[in-house]
Length: 251
Image 1 (tube, rainbow, N blue to C red):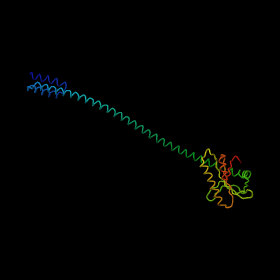
Image 2: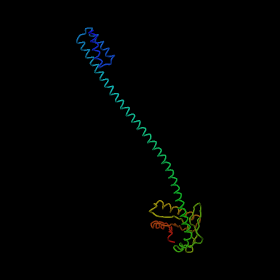
Image 3: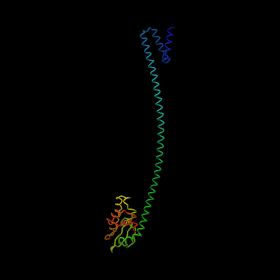
Image 4: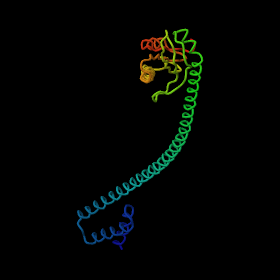
């Protein structure tokens, strides 16, 4: 009875630190060791081992708790990351939708701009034709008064050797027949056009003058530039090349 009582007391104490089955086994081992008249030193060593096992068990349980908490934090971060990824996906979708809307708006703007450019181009051509029509009426008197050029035939628009001539006519100067070749340009303003554009205008006129000269050998060709306004520096530059610049306010 004493041995059984000691076993039960040992088992109860062991259950404080170990699961019931482990406590039961350890109680049996201790009881058997005691019944086998183990040495006191061996028993003390066994008690130390049991204590170490109990401490290791406690550390294991503590570590398991820490791992459980870390797992919980990881799951929370994963949930947060999933929510963030969903928000980013929705933001990306909104961005793509907005980009599509902008693309459509840009197409509308491009069509509008193309229409404006076409309208401006049409308006520019209309104004250019109006300037030419006015020149046909006003140039004969102006050329006679300012440059001693008396027209023999009326000024016309024509084409010579593939080149379109805005203003073409025959005139007399000091009893000699000359040919008039003119181009119209709405404005010749250095502040609004660079030197390269000016060179292009002069080169175009020079090309047409040369075509007329080759088609009419022996006749002098008088080049004209008709415009609403020309900068004085351009007028001087043209005069150096033998070109008469006529501004609409002069006639």
